[in-house]
Length: 166
Image (cartoon, rainbow, N blue to C red):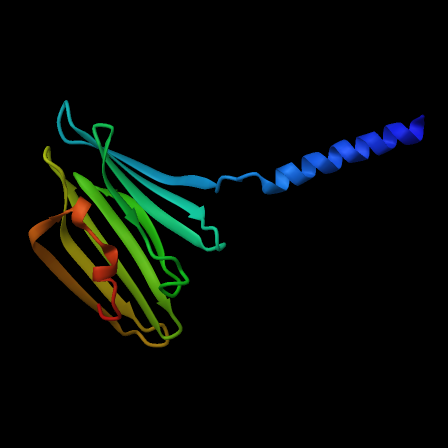
């Protein structure tokens, strides 16, 4: 009797494990940081930085921008496999956001700081601050660019601004 009960329990456990192995397991997504910016009494922006692991096992980040609970931009960032040691974070800045990107390695370290400002109509890129640092020397090159015309965040593609110069 015990033997039959044990066999039934093993069969039930084994059959559930087969089903579990074939089920879709959702990817883990974490909200890394959130910035809320109010431009007037009726208008506010929510900037959310998410991080997750892709199906291939790479660590990836994306940025969601909402205006009054309506998504106006979804920006996917390159992984650290695509661009060496690529990392990104966001900071609040006056009436906007700074998107800070760091990448490179060895003798060449790069950063890009993208300055976005908010108004009642939208969020716009207006300035880029780039640096190139050589760690073994005190050499740092900095380049500041003001963007004219300003670029709406929904049209922003970070890959167009990531290069190996300041």
